Figure 1 (cartoon, rainbow over the protein chains, first blue to last red):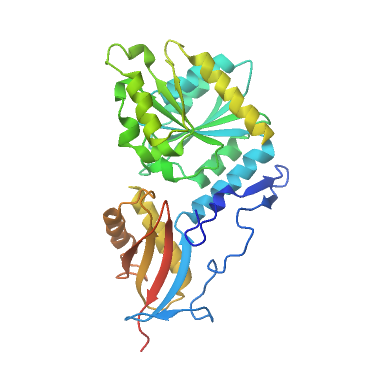
Figure 2: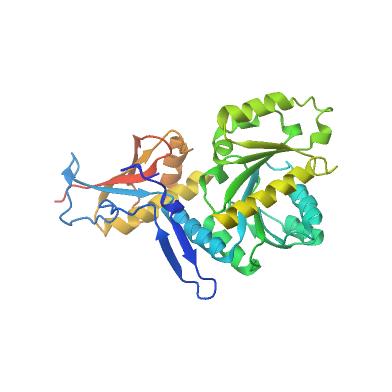
Length: 273
Length: 80
């Protein structure tokens, strides 16, 4: 959100990209009124004050504006190609990759799926996705703890997803930083697992506030780890009353049909918007 | 760790706007929902600016609303 006037995030501006030429057109940018605080330069005849030390100039530039710009470009790129992009976030080991493997196999004759894998090191996950039958690309962030929009832009271009396909971005396993970085996705989805305990949503509220859907994985283990589904749902609702919740097991395929239907619903909504 | 990347972004924004003038402090407005740890950001700011043109420039924080996270203002040194 713009800190000065309270209007929407610049990353939400609607843009259309021609995949042939790469030309990008802003259709109805969130900032349709001019912002005189965006381009101040020291020494210009802008209003300025003198503090105890010297001149103070107002800037009001979002620290993440660079990432937000790339994210807006990605969003335009996905929309131009009719690709639905989802940003999958979770802690390490919640079963994101296993869920994707099961999803790819189950949806093989219905939709085309491509996957961007984010991890600090190794290409293990991309290899797993490839073996499950989908095109994948791995991003290794090295010391980085999250994916950023410019990384996704490059990965998406090299994946070259076809029209009407689903692109799943599996973020670095981390419930903190990825919440801040818009990648240009249609929706953020959180995956938690029964072995992590019911209180993850209230321990990491920023992440759960940023998502629209929460998947509770490893339901087959619920009885062995005394997982209280009711309590977990209550905790999710406490930080994000609008989030939808799906319980499943990527290992036993329990609940996978509902998940696959949900993915198709999201893709339909994305195509209509 | 992400505060390090954020400090880099702030340094880049500052670098674009100082135009060689001596800077005293950059002030960043942060809202409670921005997920920013001020102490960590301050620590990273020192590391990121070390041995650069803006070494020694202070970082100040202004409390803001919601998820605000913007470089609000630059304070320059008094000109001789």
